[in-house]
Length: 117
Image 1: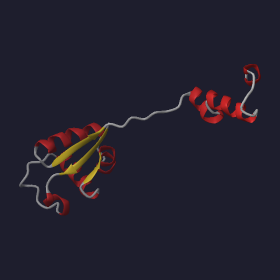
Image 2: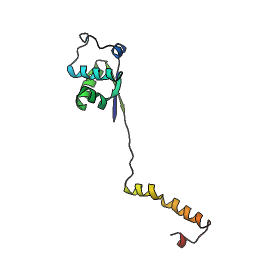
Image 3: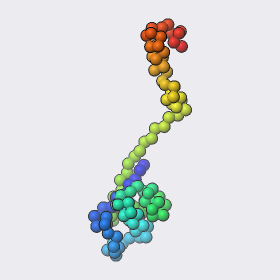
Image 4: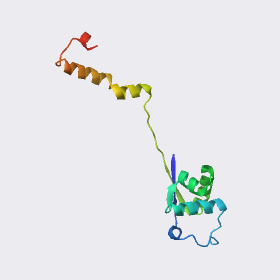
C-alpha cells in the first residue's frame, strides 16, 4: 500500500515560520519540514528519507498531523503481477496454442495431428 501525505493548509506551502500557533511534537515538525522540501506532497518513504525518521514514526506523526487537520493521508493499493518460471518459459517460447497454430500455418494450413506433435 502506497501512502502519500499532503499538506492541508495553504499557509504551510510557502511558510515555515512560528510554530507557536500550533502545538507540534518534534517528529511532527520534522515531517512538515520534509513535506515542505517536497512541495507539500510526498510518499511516506521519501518523507522518512528526508526527515531521517523511521517509516513507522513518520506514519504516527502523520496520523497526529491529520487529526490536527495539517495533513491529509492518501492511500493507494498497488498490485504487482510477476511471472513464475513457467510463465517466463512461455514468454520466451510462446504459448503452446500459438506455437501449434504457427506450425500448422507453416505446413500449409492442414496436417495430420501426429505431424503437429
